[in-house]
Image 1 (cartoon, rainbow, N blue to C red):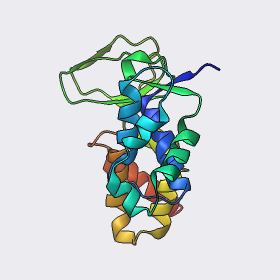
Image 2: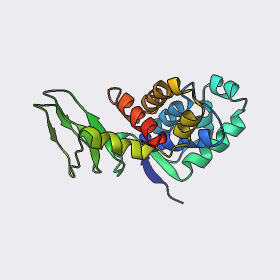
Image 3: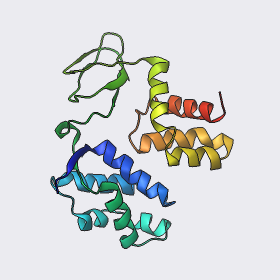
Image 4: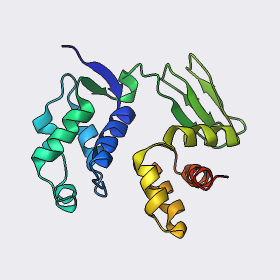
Amino acid sequence: MGTRPISQRDALDRVLTAFSERGWRDDSSAAQAVVAAATRNPGPLDLDRLVRAVPRPFLRNNSIGRKEARAAIAAALSGVEVRAAAQTDDRAALTVNTTNNQRITIQNSGPWAGNVGAGGDISGVNQIQQMVGDVAIQALADRYSRRPEVQRILESAPPNERHPRLAGWLRQIGAVGVDIAPQVAAELIKRYLGG
C-alpha cells in the first residue's frame, strides 16, 4: 500500500490533534519532535524511531508510556509520508507576513494568505490568493476555531489567560507568524464570546 505525501504543518496538526483527543498536553514540544523525526527520513514511517523522538517529560506529564504514544502517532500518521515544505505539492494554505521592502519567493502550489509590506513583492507563485488585514485574520481564525485545543483553552482558561494561551499555542504549532498570533487569538475569543 502506498503512502500519501503531506506537509510538516499537516503532520504537526494531525499529531497535535491525536494527542489532544486523548487529553494529553504537549508542553514539551513532543509533536514537533515527532514531525522532525518523520521528516528526516523520507519514505514509509518508522514508528519505533518516531516514538523514540517523544521527549520523556511529555510521557511523564501525561502519565503514559511509549506504547500509548506509539498508538497515537500511528493513528495520526498512518498511510502518509511527511515531507519538508519544499518537497510537497500540498494544497494547504501557506501564511506569509513581511515588513517593508522584502522580496518573497513562495515554493508552494496551493493558496497562500498573508500581508506584504509596502515596497515588497511576491514571485514564484502559481496561484495568488492574497488576503490582507482583517480578511487574513478571519481566514486563519476559521481554520483553527474548531480545533479541540482551541476549544479547551476557550472553555477552561480563566478569561484573563485565554488570549496569551491561544497566541502561545498558535505560535507553538507554527500556525501563524509571531506578529499576528495575538490578532488571531483575539478573533477566536471574539467568536467564542459571540461577537
